[in-house]
Image (cartoon, rainbow, N blue to C red; front, side, top):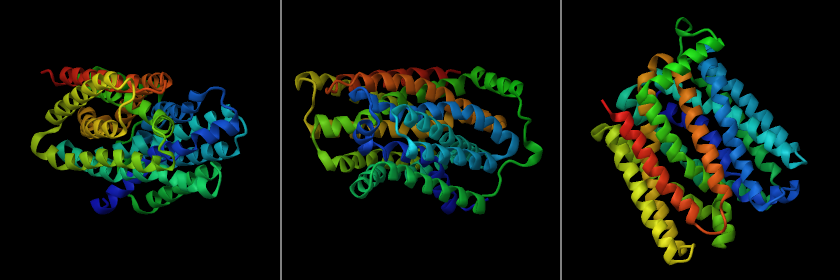
Length: 392
């Protein structure tokens, strides 16, 4: 077993590939849409949601595959698929080809995202697992802080295709690190045959486990407006607020609040437990979002920038508490089928979040009504799902 000082950054890098693929693209969306002939202004959001769609499909393959052939091999296959998607995006001359490449990137990125959770579950459980995941998320969150700046920096010296080339290189580095340093965590005698019947049986077990299903649905509800925020962040900051090249700075500041909360959660969870923190976080998100939504009426749809940032700092703090704890709560009863369990948890939460988040984002009209209202409704829905999962 790797020491935590190396294991945490390795897992964080593997899991952050999806975030890097999302956030590094944000400054380039207008240029990509213009070069590839996107029909409408909001169509560029599909470059983000297509990635999430692929990440919803990928777990069906890589979760069961990791239980069959082992964790390392599954991640390496996923990284190869991701890198192929990068090549397609680099070569794209039409918008639909770009979307196809992004879906393929999402399918590949699902492997390190899902199987890394299974690696953590193979070695840790309970509150210690939540602690490790929190530290992983704290390292992971530096990616959204620097990714838009990385994308903006690349655009200053090259075109948007160079961003995909950089993603290709990062995936290669992560694969080599995993191959050389991380031991396999699933012994051969514990592996399961890869069969559709076995997958369906395991999936049914996850769905029938009320605790796993409830916290998975809570994840999906909490993540939906976050998908919408990621899809519209470039438009909100550079179009509605006109911050120009300062967009990565504002984006990084908000990501920092998320990361600090996740890091603090690694300490709080050992004392207060995952469930209590999840309830508190859902309440914070719901109340803060509802208050902000009410204030938007006073300012005719667009808050002053400082007030918008302050509101998101509070909301993202609550979301940061939710992410690490809900994941651990959902995975807790699934230790005997960690690979498929991680896959189904990720699949269900993604398929809840992406369509809803995509719809919320596409309704963006230059005001903040829809986005902030969605945060309030999703927080209430997440709270209801957590309460359902906590019933004896």
